[in-house]
Length: 320
Length: 128
Image 1 (tube, rainbow over the protein chains, first blue to last red):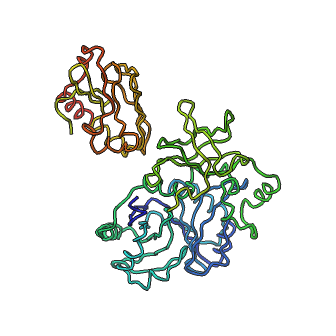
Image 2: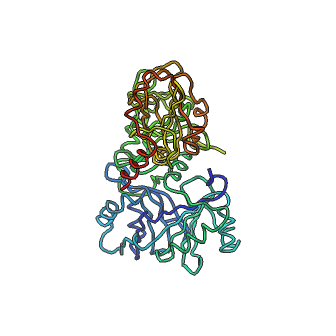
Image 3: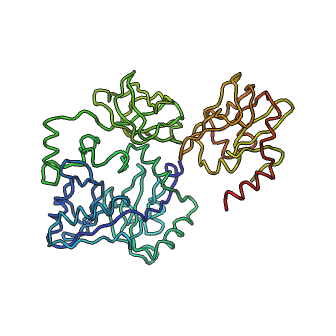
C-alpha cells in the first residue's frame, strides 16, 4: 500500500540484461521478439515476448533501443540461461551478443511520489518530459544510470540500471528520503497481480501463446518473428482457454494449481493468487474456458479441500 | 519473545489456563515465521477441539498453515476481530490476537505441554 500512496524502492539486481550490437543487431532483435523495433527511436523501450516455434512464450522482456546498432534486452532472472542459449542459436554470426547481467544492478522506484523524488535528485527537466516506455542516460550521485519510465506495479515509476559498484550508495541515498520505503519481491508480486500483469513461470510459459495469455496487443503480426507461423495457425484454428482475472469473495486466497469450477464443471486452473491489502480481498489469474470469461461470472476455486467463491473480473483487478 | 505464564506446544501454539477454561493463540515466533497474516479460519462456537488436532487455519502471504489445539475441549468463544483484521495476530500474538476460548475437557492433558522456560530453550535449540 505504501507503493500506491507514496514511493517504494525494490532491489531488482537479479534480472538479466543482454546486449545485441552491430549493424545486424536490429534485424536479429526483430526476428527474436514479437514487438516492432524498426520504428523505435533511440530512447524508446517496448514490452514483448520471445516465442518458440510453437508460439509458446520463452520469456517476456523489455527491449531498449540505445542506438540504431545497440539494443538492451531485460529478461527474467530465472530464464537468463535459457534465453541466452536461445538468442545465441538464433542471431547468426554477425551480431555482437553479450550477457552483462552480472555487472548491471537494477533498482526500481515506484509510486506516486517517485517522480518528485527523482526530480529532487536529477532536476525537474529530466523527469518532466520522460514519457512512459522511454529512457534517458542520467548522472546520479556520480554514477551513469539508464533511467526508464517503466515498472511492474501500475503506479508512476522508474527503473534504474547502472553498474554494480554504485548499488549501495544509490540504494542508501534513495532510502534516505522520508517518503521512501524499501519493499520486497513479495509486495511487488501483489502489486503486479492487482494490475493483472503476468508473471513468467506462473501465468505465462512455453505451453501458452500470447493469444491464450490475453497479451496479443504485444504481438505485431505485421512483421516476421520466430513463432509467427504457429500464431497464424492459432488465429485460424482458434483456442479454448484464455488467461483471465478473478476476485474472491473474502480474504481467503486461491493458490497456483487450484481448479476453477463453474458449478460442478472444471473450467480452468489458477496460475496466481494472493491477498490484496488494497482491496482487502483475494485476487488472482487463471486459464479458463473462454466461454466462461464473462465479467461477474460466478466461479469456485478449489484444491479439493477448501472452496472459495469468486467472480471473473477484467484486469486491472485493482482500480484507484 | 516468549510470554511467561503460558504453556506452549512444539507447533508454536500457546495456551493460557483460566480456571476450567483455556485461551489459545500462536506464539510470536510463529507469527514471525508466517509473515503477514491475511486470513484466519476460526472454529465455530460449540464445536469440539482435540489436543494436537487442527482446529484453525492461518493464511499468510507465504502459505496456509494449520493450527493445532494445545488441549481438548468445547469452544465457548472465538475472536471475531480476526475475521476482518487477521493482522492482529502479527502485532499482538499473545494478547489481542487470541484465537478462541474453550471449556477444558481434561486438565491432565497440560502435562505434555512446555512451560515458557522450556519453550524458550526449545526455540534456542531450533535456531542453532
